[in-house]
Image 1 (cartoon, rainbow over the protein chains, first blue to last red):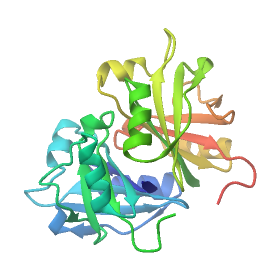
Image 2: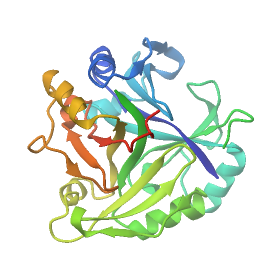
Image 3: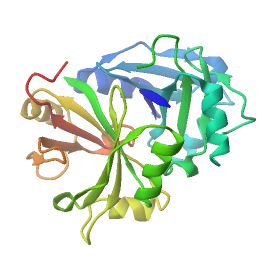
Image 4: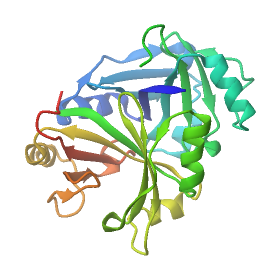
Length: 140
Length: 140
């Protein structure tokens, strides 16, 4: 069911500093900061040959990562995102297996403009999982 | 400098249950448990098309992840592993940039039989980073 590891999201209290460290010290290809006000985050994409790191910092008063940063003031890994080729079928299989899908169970549009769902971290060893509908033809 | 995201390591208090959930619910290809007594862990490899998840649980009394599990009884993301084509050059560049390399700074042999180093999580937004010497010809 799950396909590629699309990205690992890391919350950074100092986004510019985190981006500089990935670029200048780890030598990675790093994007400019991209504000996503509808998602309450600003993101820097770290492009690796096989996957991505997304460095996130809160944007606006209602940021969904504000609570995480309050609990983890130094930042930390926020979630892993796996691609699936049929998000609705995946959701139904997960629910039937007793996994808790967050929210009302209806996909939202994620930061890449694709439908996403989040799974309860307590059902996956404390790690928050995002499932993203893969673009057609991109699942391998 | 950094190349592929080799793996994301997740500590699981119940390794068999975590492996079953990745296999049966997420539909991933999952290895049998591999005891690595010299590393103090038992690992299950979750093979994704572009990277790996390594589910870890402590093995033996001196496990290096026992403290993590005591602090995070439900488990959690333990580290990210990036491949580098020259681990010594990477280390020297990191130290010159003020990044703290854990231990005595000399590479150890990691779980894949390759030299590895770990970087202080406080220098990377609370995320522990492992650098692994890539196998020759495998860096892209």
